Amino acid sequence: MKRPEQEEQRLDAWLWCARLVKTRSRAVTLVREGHVRINRQATVKPHARLRPGDVLTLPLGPAPAVRVLAVKALAQRRGPAETACLLYDDLPETPALLHGKNEAGIQPRRDECPAAPLPASNRAERSRRGTENRGRCSAFGRV
Image (cartoon, rainbow, N blue to C red; front, side, top):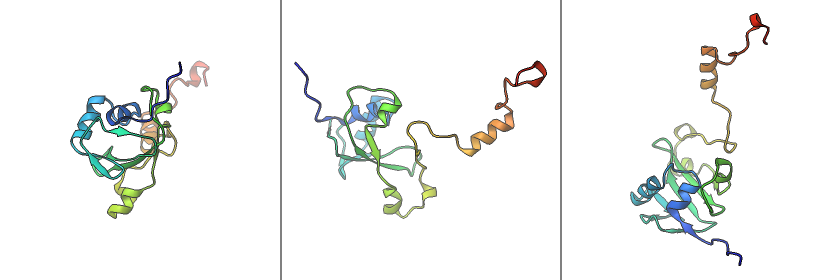
């Protein structure tokens, strides 16, 4: 007998499966402290039911960063990052518009999921240390 697809999922379990938090207990703490909103309604219940189409608002990253996510799908299990990023859509820069902050005040989002190119500062640091050419030595015949 085929099992019917899930129509709803616990909020804390979905946050963990979507890899928005590292541990399920951190998801519970985030919700109980009142930092998460579902469809603009604050919730303090980690067992609140989440459905596809719901909109989550939660603080992630540095202090002023607020992310607005649209739930696209529910998770069967916690999988790799490539699968997790398919569970939600990052909505446009609504926090910047609502609070009058410029884009510099909000952590930039990655355009590609899950791997984005390193920031210029990391590339400069790598070249300063000379680690980009490690293993390439013309004196030993390797190039």
